[in-house]
Amino acid sequence: MSKARYNRVLLKLSGEALAGGQGFGIEPEAIGQFAKEIADVAATGLQLALVIGGGNIFRGMAASAKGMDRAQGDYMGMLATVMNALAVQDALEKNGCDTRVMTALSMADVAEPYIRRRALRHMDKGRVVICAAGTGNPYFTTDSAAALRALELKCDAIFKATKVDGVYDKDPAKFDDAVKYDTVSYMETLEKRLGVMDSTAISMARDNDLPIIVFNLYEEGNIRKAANGEPIGTTVQGGD
Image (tube, rainbow, N blue to C red; front, side):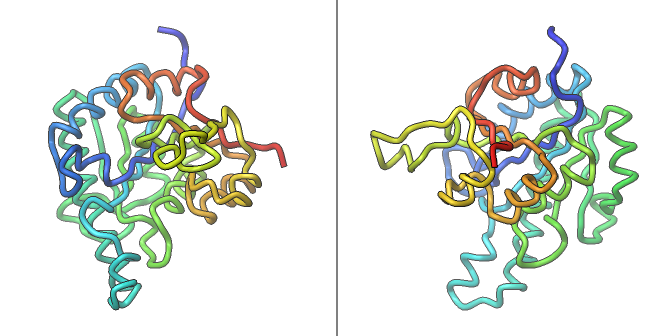
């Protein structure tokens, strides 16, 4: 296998990826499909951290729109990400991958607390670190948590694995004339509201020159291709 271009990356997964075809909750078969590929890539020596959303179980912003206190809803969303992290941990370990779940909220009976130096040590030992509970603060999304953890853990890039094959100028599900970008700048992403990640995450990546690679999670081999530096999906970087 060719030497990976990246040595350490953060893989951002949406909660919806864990729901599979049912659209909500956790579907073990769906998790198993991408867990095998993640484990295979980790076995090549690529150091991996994961951040997983919780939208398949609970969305704090959606609950807030219906009258729930925003902070309360966000804390519930953080708990949803912990459930997802444990499910992914189970699937990865069934594929022979050594893992640690680390949470921004204290829950020592099910996971380690997120401590930056400890997370770095786990990654140095070849363990996949699954970062759960977002940043531990309300009003911050798991996109923001992904950017923060990627920077803290000195990752070379963020891999944003999603249900489309890159970034488009408009929603390709609604517009037949949508045009896909091979590369796009941070500023254009913000100005055109391209929906790659939230504005806080994009701004953090821009300020620290951290590339974001957006690709289709469901196409077999894409994580490996991205890790090897092959042209895939859309790269968000520089150009400002």
